[in-house]
Length: 226
View 1 (cartoon, rainbow, N blue to C red):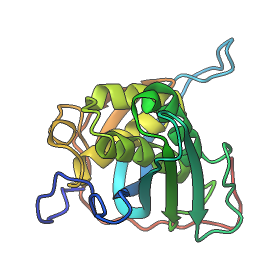
View 2 (cartoon, helix red, strand yellow):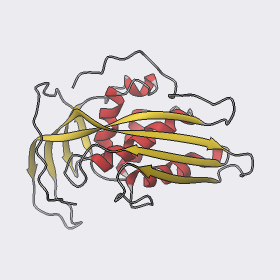
View 3 (tube, rainbow, N blue to C red):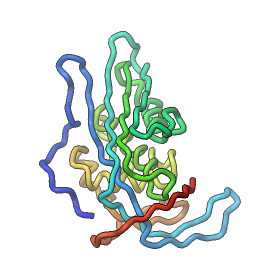
View 4 (spheres, rainbow, N blue to C red):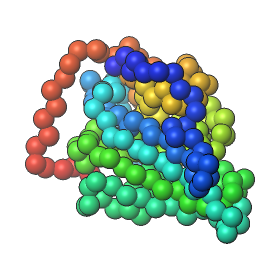
């Protein structure tokens, strides 16, 4: 998938509000498909080694991250909430978007003013369909907080954090870096910024790959696979 043609923007969407002090950013969380996949024998740790080509597609969720500082909270005292258009989605740590926010608070929140992180998910990607919907949402939250908090993290560090959330999440981070122009330049133009990759090991050893630009048809049956 080619970069979306949009006006160049390097600051979080919306920016600081002169009244509330809130900052927000909307990151497109793209679905992925596998163009090929080879699965090896199960290892003692329970994982199967894989060798696969993953491709990001234009179908996406919208993940809006709002950071609301509060003078009533001490530095690093940050809470997380989530709202979604899918009522059946969990809004606690079972949701990777919330888990990603908690991870970022643990790693970098102590240097931030106390307040609240509100995550708003506009879901389009089917749940439990193997299209990395939840994984992409987690990656989008990490990208969003890196931008809102002006942390200056490299894409490599973002992918490392994403690896703590799941095997598909680092790929989602590199794909989002390629296609979201609201993200910082050092992330967007990193060597690993790519909409396709070869994944080996547990799926987290990634190498950018030339993807396929042809249209695809996606059929989701009425079954779900966790």
